[in-house]
Length: 279
Figure 1 (cartoon, rainbow, N blue to C red):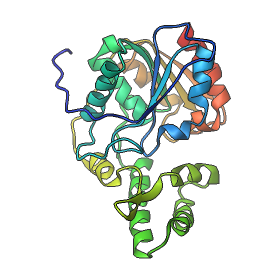
Figure 2 (figure 1 turned 90 degrees about the vertical axis):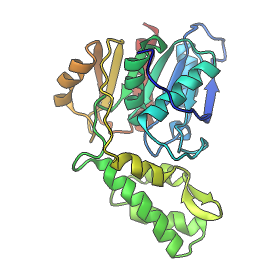
Figure 3 (figure 1 turned 180 degrees about the vertical axis):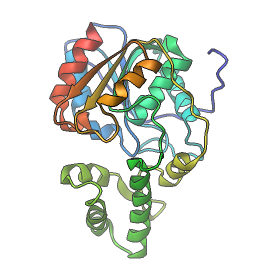
C-alpha cells in the first residue's frame, strides 16, 4: 500500500467550517462532491455538520471542477493524489471521509490504498465499484449533454443570461426538477472570453470514455452507505455486493430521496450521519 505511486497534485479549492462552540473531537471530516458538482451545491449542510458533530469540516472541489485548477489529467490516481496532498498540507493525520457519488468512489479507493488516513467512510448513493459509463449509465448522457449545451450557446452567440435560459431548456428533459437544474446552471460562465462550464467538460468526457483499469476497492474500514429510495445509482439489490468489497458496512435508506440526497433531504442526511460519526 505504501508503494502506491502518487501523481503531481494540484491545490484544491475548499471551505473549512468549525463549530461556534469549539471543536470537541480532534479527527476532522473531509468531504468531496460528485461529478459536475461542487462544494457550493451543499449549501449550508457542511456548516450545520460542523455545528452538530463538534468537528472541523473541510469540503473540497475536485480538480477540473469549479475553483480548482483545470488539468490535462483527470483520473482516479490524480484525484487520490490530490486528496493525499490535501491531507498533508492541512496536517490531517486521519479523517472521517464523506463522499457523494464520485467523491465516494475516490474515498473508497483512498481507504483501500491508504487505510491509515481514513477513520470512517461515508458513501452517499454510490456503489464503491460503480463502473462509470456502462451501457445506459445516466452519467454518459449528462456529460454529452453538457458538451452539446456549451457548443450550442456558443454557436447561437448568446450572452450569459440567455445561455442559461437555453441551457435550462436543454437540460429539462434530463433533469425535470427546476431547482436541481439551477444548481448546474451555477456552473455556466465564461472562460478565456468564451461561454463555458466551470467544470472541465472536455477532460471529464475523456475520463469517462477511457478504458482504464479501475482500482477495486476492498477495505475493512468502518463504512456507512446512505442511499436514496428513488436513486438511479443504487438499490436494495446492490447491498450484498457492497458487503463483498466493504464487509464492515452498514446501510441507511432515505425514503423519497434520489441521488442528490444531501441536497434534497439535508435534515434526514444529518440525522443519520452525525450519530454515526460520533459513535
